[in-house]
Amino acid sequence: MIPHHSSAILMCEQAAISDPEIIDLCEQIVQSQEEEIAQMKALLDTIQKRLSLLVYVSIVGLILTGMIQARQNPAFEGLLRFGSTYSTALSLKHIVVVAMVGIALVRSLALGHRERLTPSQEKLSVGLLLLNLALGVAILLLTGISAAYALPPA
Image (cartoon, one colour):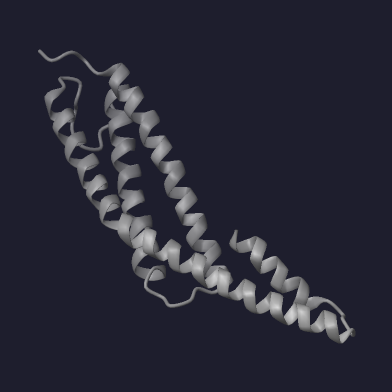
């Protein structure tokens, strides 16, 4: 919704308008859209702050459960080993989790504590969020692969 409201502001600011009534209308539109954008950003910030702890706890949980499962499986060859399909999938999964942690830290520490983000910073933040989403899907895929190639406990 923010891009939609931003477009209304842009149209009013870029339009070559000479009619005083239309100019007044555009001023009202800009003011109301800026207020609504501020409300939406505040809501998004609140949701992000509320969920950031859950994100970090979930990532730690992924790491711990992955380590426990790996050590219990006879196909486990060691951390970051690529000798079998199982070990390769687990190693890639650990690498992806580390990348997700790094991306989450960049988003929250470098971009998350600013009062206002520039449009390029907002675009970067959304891009990093989408990248983390894609990496999360990759983790699910790698989990499925490692489960399919896991050896039964001895």
